[in-house]
Image 1: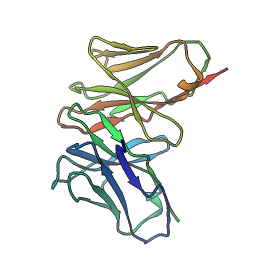
Image 2: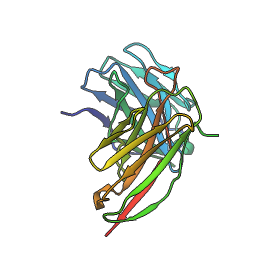
Image 3: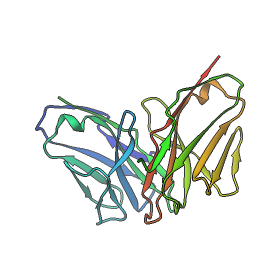
Image 4: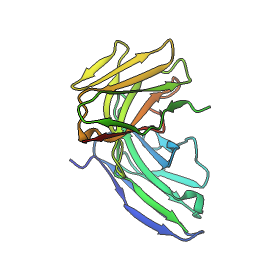
Length: 111
Length: 111
């Protein structure tokens, strides 16, 4: 009964370092999403994937790349981390009636 | 102007009291509406969908006012465990599952 699993839960990076956030869901959902959440801003969509093999930019895609590896997995990559990317990142998947299920989040600090 | 706007609060509510708050949305053709609950440092979770005729789920009542473009959430007989941030979520007409999130309304229930 895992739902959406994200790793890692916490990460500290130096400016310029790269990393990949992993996300997997076991609910057989087609759609998956990456969001960032900053104080007072609400959740903002970074990238989404309507189905395996497709990805599209969301509201704030700059500085990120994604890979929909298969139906279960959707990863987010920061190629060269910047302090402005300090945030809480949530992965989600959605069922056919648009209800979204979120992972527990990754708290990222970029120094 | 934000697509979805909420009063950030906090709404300080005595235990047992009723609290209500609204969320306004800017896209008049928005189709689906939800309330999510987010506990401190946790992921958002669906509280309830909002239907055109209004709906209740126990102590929670959600209403939709399309003419004035807002949705509301009312919590009766507040419990300490209702303390959380409540996120208003709207789907856009051109989306198959992309949601627009409000920044949230914080509710603090006090003994």
